[in-house]
Amino acid sequence: MEMIRRHIERHAPYLGEITPSCPADLSILIAKLLAKPSVEGRLSAAEVIICLQTILQEQMTHHLLT
Image (cartoon, rainbow, N blue to C red):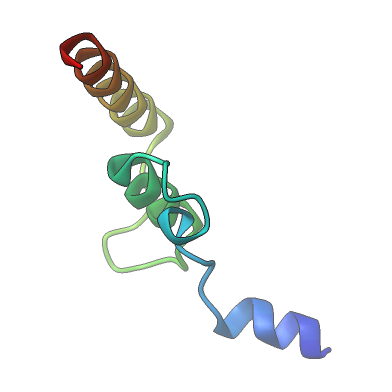
């Protein structure tokens, strides 16, 4: 029962803290996906795909410039 209570009450750790090399935008997206339901609701699959495509494009642009 304790594990269930912790799962309900605690938030997932921020990915950027665990893996500092993770892009901030990806960490934010994952945090939104793991968040408890909110007033705004969940992201749709199409919104997640758009976010991931944007993050990938930004990473590719960043690597080309460096």
